[in-house]
Length: 247
Image (cartoon, rainbow, N blue to C red; front, top):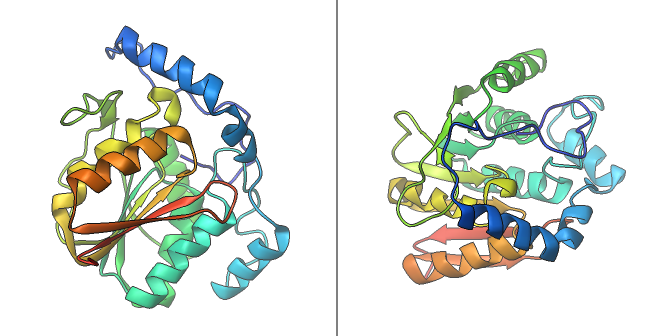
């Protein structure tokens, strides 16, 4: 969830107080917050201006198309990973968890390289609407869907998107939400979409350098042997890259 505007230090509130959150979840958030504050501080930087300019030029977007990066937004390295994947693999279907700046980059890259479709989910209904307006201002489109938070699938903690009719045969899965403040391992529940991945599909997980995401990666590696995972340390936040059938 990342707007085109300058993002405040604290993210928008994500949790309806009526939703159940266990004491253990709250303790884990507090404990990991004490551990991973260096990574959180690094995430406030969105990358070099030169890299951002190069990315916009590559996509034939104006200099003001992405006026702000950093804070809770994807950094330029993660956005470049996305564009590289789309240009190289020409995915027919991209699913994104957590819409915003990355949605514009994905939609424009699809428009330029292959013409696939983007289905993007976010927990904030008003933000889904404003993101759609942002994309329209740049002459790109995407299927942006509101997905309220609710009980997570399987044995994952925290809360998770209640996804309505997610696509099958996903060629590229981009994971940039929900926020860690729900639980440090919250994004692990994205594995509920792994059975829908097409042969040779790609997975891109943002913020992969954080301790919580590293634990998620280890669990995924054990549970999904048909997916080869690699960690890219470049950029401000790190990226976990999964390749289906790459072993």
